[in-house]
Image (cartoon, rainbow, N blue to C red; front, side, top):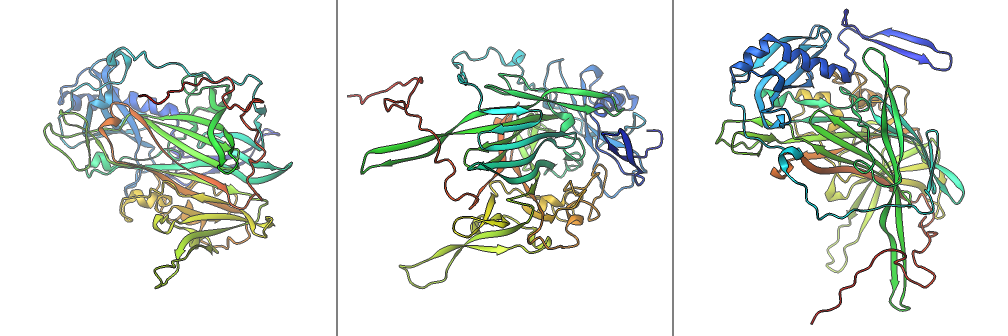
Length: 580
């Protein structure tokens, strides 16, 4: 802190030695540590400069003031090597009140984190603070409903998964669990046991970055553009999960060990939740000729963790299905980041939440997942697949087919989704074929292809180039880990780091060890129903086998029928006949 310099070390764990110690270029800012958020808020609340500005707004009780620290980003200005955060300001009307109902629009505070002092106040003179209470806490909502009956999940014959350290086996699946301060949960060495043979699919899978740009033109809203992984560290913001609240069923928990900004270790208990769920119908067919019905129910194994990023919660779920599908799902919840306008006014840049000038701005949540492939070996190729209709003048004949295009180089593989072309991408093995002679493969379907809506010359877009393409593919290189660069905090990025740098050489990605980067997300046009606490909004993607198996891999699932031919077993059935 005394020098404003950052250092990077590599430690050899078995020998307890530091094998590399490098001073980083001046101005390089590592991610913001969890304890720095509290230090920032304390500095703001204690500042006479802030107290004077708040008094103009009629706010004098500093115990009710909330300073919400945000990364400062980069706007073409040299910060002189200072480590800075920008605090958005809110207040409560009483101790348990929801502060996001009372934002101070266009009033922000700059804090030097290393000195722990306020270095500036940005006050555009908008003095109205919405004062209508909007709360979600039980103290304000009132009695909870009593008509919801409990659900019980049990495994009377024991679990279907086993855990040995960080290694998990579940039916045909095999993988290792990891956890990093930046990404949180990471899956390693994901493989599927096909007729006794463990076949590799992915070396490593994780969510590596996200950016949240806001739409309104006001200064305080435009400056909100957090990189929640690279600037804040998902791992540090991970919740301790509770049985019956965050996870339900027969749960295996995993702790996460981290260090604070002074190097002191601590543990987040129950950081990762592992459990099995019913997955509904897996497959079914009723042969009307023979009156034979065959039905199989699916299962899924879910590995999850939840992070709190100030106002927002993100629940992340990696799900493995019996048919070889891997699904990644995000549930966004928590509280909207709000703004204020004059009472009686409206705005096209967001949703009014009450009649006292409170609104929630339009914004985006753009995520990027890193998929390090090892599909039946380290040598893979990537194809783009589109459905093409053939030209014909015959009204009785109009053929169409799936057309594959090999993506040969890194730059050629920076691609956008096209729903009208039904575009998707396939990762194929170069060393193994299936029973019809085709290369074994998996495909990724872009179900939520949300990309950056800000203009290309905007600083947020230039700092988040990953958000401009749905798919990127790079040849694997040691150290190429993060799409927005190693140190995005206060960084301009441009083309010297992150994905633009990773693909600059435009190397061949045919029959190579490839890494796929998938951007997706939520275009959050806010609803009034998202207030005062937001019901989950979901996004994600899935990858599924495409010629990886020689047939449906779930043919061997047992029937749910009893020996007497009934499907209900010990479940309850209520039948309502036709009424006269």
